[in-house]
Length: 262
Image (cartoon, rainbow, N blue to C red; front, side, top):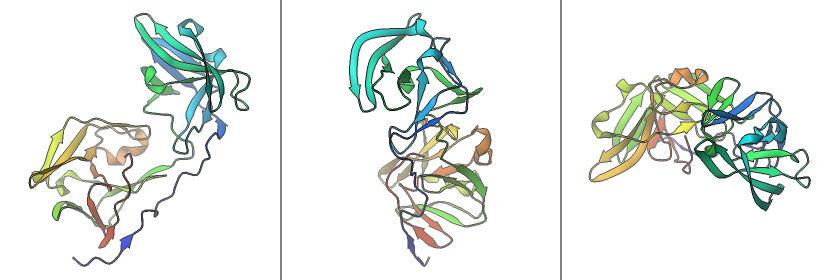
């Protein structure tokens, strides 16, 4: 096959929200530990601690004070001075799980609480559970059907080829190509036990590594059997990491971008 061109890594839109940007959250936010509600608020704030995604900062008055354990330790953090707290619900304890910000915090953050995401067992926006981190209101994720031809190769071995992919466009990530299983050659794929989650797509059900020659290429493909409602077109389809395989789209070789999440 003749290679027409090689596309640059920067051919997809980047995230542009600055660090320490603050916006109100228009959604009800709740989080639970040990069956108890730790927080329940309609006045959370988005705070971008990095350009990649925001964190929630919760008004102290919307936090269940009965589960907060003051650890008597003040920390001087990038966004101000905060009193460190743990969480205790029955037998469940989470030391260092929360920071309550004082009066010298960035404008708007005084009297808010920043929780460590994984210290809590479940987070919800309205009545939908969310995973990994808050959904960025400036990130758009679209799943579009296409008749463009995508080829997936690794070390010269063809792993998949399809002229009916579902293309997922997500701000800050390279385009992902989700393929029907009938277009994938499983002769070189080995099922693994890996499970990952995405705030926008849900939790994966399957992962595969590629066994080519004497080498194992770990976790190069995945599938969501039950994605979130907005991403239903990818249900049961298989995508490969652009960063780990060689992709050709309509005869154009795509340059491998740096390793990122899905």
